Each structure stands twice: as structure tokens, then as C-alpha cells.
Length: 342
Image (cartoon, rainbow, N blue to C red; front, side, top):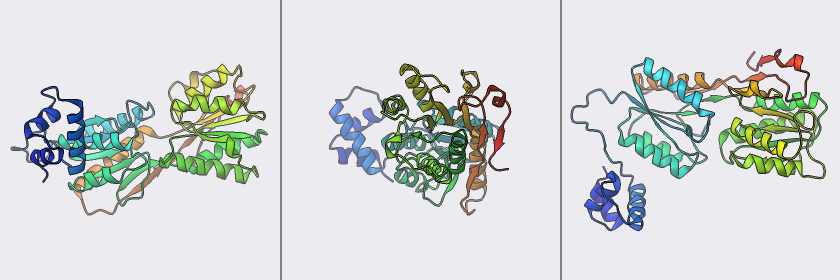
């Protein structure tokens, strides 16, 4: 097992200096901090901040590495994880990955240093090292929201067909130039929703236009939408890949002097609590976020009880919530909630 002395040798510093960097007990030169942190990552050292001398049954803690603070979509997911964990007598330790591979590794290292009994991870586009870091210590890990090519337990939403259904709906209203503000490149959810968007275009005999598809991850959605709207032939309808991006897209439409749905129809993947308060109210795909979090904990508990179980991959149905931002009359807004699984 890697020790602090191994880190000190790799960084070319003393063990005392490594201790100060790890425990933040004294100010250390930034260059030295960088060297020590690089050595920690290179050696795989995990500082043990939890006394284990009397540990007999684990810490009864589930670690959750997710972009919860930087992505409001995950708030309800985390709520589901915490609720199910509490029912089972476990505490939840939450770390933010910032949807970044380096941030993801730091989050996992923090959880392992606290000796969690299992990990729930919303993986970034490159999660191999993070998954290996957990599984090499014999701990259960469940991937949540985003699927990854690995033989481990995973849970998320249907993405392809629900996104195609959004395109179907817009096409049925006569739209032919439909744009997509996609999510962060490399994420499984982005790839699947892009696949669904293209599927919807194909089955409505619409040709995909490359300059009407762009990544608008988080705050970039504003600039992507402004670019769409500034074209000589702008789109007449917009599909947005997540709730956080929807805010940026709506702000861009407003700042362009346009209105929804009179000038452009707007639909989104991800419903959220205040979507029904918008004017016009937002047509969106609603995910079973809390249920997703609860199922992740159920998978962990099953894995803790029976480590040799075959890995499970579970997809939860998504729900089409029909309101007015798509351009339909207000009378339709309260009417249609269609479960894609039915």
C-alpha cells in the first residue's frame, strides 16, 4: 500500500512537507504543493483520515461523487440517494466532480480517504481511472445518470427515444429547421440525446444541418443559442439538452428580442420545479431523478450483501410533459403527460 514516504520520494520533498500539504497544517510553497499533489496522483496514495483501529462493520457511509453543487439537476438525484441511504442506516458523504476527470479523481480520493463503504459516481467523459481506484479497493461502485462501458452496476434514464419524441412533436407542428443545444462533449447523456435528435429528424424525413447542432454545456448555451438566432436562416424550433442550458437558451432568445413560442418554439430535456412557472410554460422531458438515486442505493446494498451478483444496468422511463413553449395552445398544457415506457 502506498505510504506518505512514497509520495515524499516521488515529489522530492520530506515526509513532513507531504503531511503539511495533505493536512493543510502549514502554508507550503505553491510549486511544492503542485509537486506533492502530482506525486499523490501518480502513486495513488490515499490519505487515511478516519481511524480504523476499532472498525468492525465499515463506516456505514456511502460516498457520492457528482456535480451536485455545479449542476442543479443532480440536487433531486442526491436527495433520492440520501433518502434511501438513511432508510438503510447509512450516512451520505457528498463530493463535487465538476464534471471534470481531474476533479473526479480528487472527489474519489476524498471519499476513499474517509473510508466510505461504497461509491455512487456520475462519471465524467473519462471515468476509467476513477472506477479502477474504487474497484481496486474492493468497494462497490454504482454509476448514476451516465452509462459507461464497464462491467459494473449502472442506473440512468432513457435518453434516445425521449429526445426523438421531442423532435417528433416539433415536426408535427410544422417545424423543419430544428436546432439542438447539446450537452458537454463526451458525456454518455450528450451522446445519447444527440442520437435521439438525429433519430427524430430521420423519421420525420428532415435533413440534419450541422451548423444547427452545437455543444452548449452549461453557460455556453447562451452563446450557442445567440449564434443560432443570428443566422441568415435561423431555426424555428430549439431542443435544449439539459435544464441548466435551458436557462441560458431562454436568456439568449430574450436578449435577441425574440419571444417563445411566437418567434421560436422551445423544448428541453429535463423538467425542473419552476418550469411550470415560466411564461409560456416549458414543454420538457421529466426524468425520474429521485427514483434514480434510490435505485442506486438499492444496487449498492445488494452488492454489499452479495458481491458476486452479475452487474446490472437499469434504465428508467422518461416522461413527456406537454406545456406551451412548443407553440401548442394553452389548453394542451395541462393535458398530456406521456410515459415512454407505456
